[in-house]
Amino acid sequence: MGRDTVQFSCHHCNHCCTEVVCLPTPWDVVRIVKQTGANPYEFLEFLAPDEISEVAKNDPTWLDCNGNRFIMALRRDTKGCHFLDKKTRYCSIYEARPILCRLYPFKLQETRDGKFKGFVLHSDVGCPRHRDGVVPTKPLYELYLDDSKHQEDYDDLVEVFNKKQYPGKRPEDFIEMFVKGARRREKKART
Ligand code: SF4
Ligand code: SF4
Figure 1 (spheres, protein in one colour):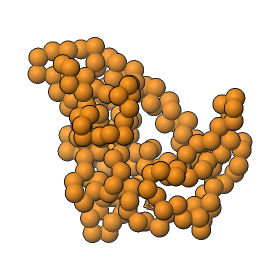
Figure 2 (cartoon, rainbow, N blue to C red):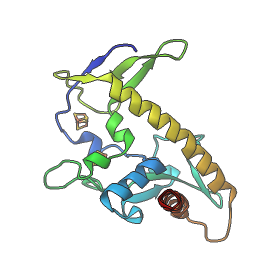
Figure 3 (spheres, rainbow, N blue to C red):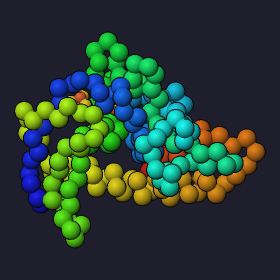
Figure 4 (tube, rainbow, N blue to C red):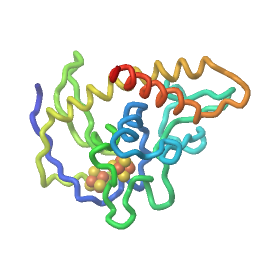
């Protein structure tokens, strides 16, 4: 293990919940549905390439609907993320929030041979990066590994989705695909 801590404390300026588009994985979505009962058709939106510039053209999570491309994101309005409590300005699903929100604004550092070195703070994501706190890196690294695994599975799911082309295909059909899959697995585990 590399450095055990990173100096940071969140001052709840709300930048990340108002200005940054959050891209959840299907596993994040399933967890949110399970833990909060929220409706994924209400809290997700699908952005076209001209609505989001931060995602590379060759990112494997672009959904293809008969030649039109979309990326899955948490819905936002002019005041920020769908889950931002507009009165308290705190996340209303804190315990179930996506892994990306948990990792923000930390950035993994690896050695030349790909081994874990530690975490630093992203310099280009708009966080004011207050240094008056200490955050242990072990739980962050566990989250990072979890997220990497889920990203690989996400890519595979998208590949399957993109192979199916049919009249009237919508990006929302992708929700059906993985939420149904999760329900089937849950049912099987109970029997
Ligand atoms: S941008 Fe940084 S300081 Fe502001 S709420 Fe997000 S993590 Fe906290
Ligand atoms: S899910 Fe919560 S932590 Fe993540 S962007 Fe939305 S309000 Fe912020």
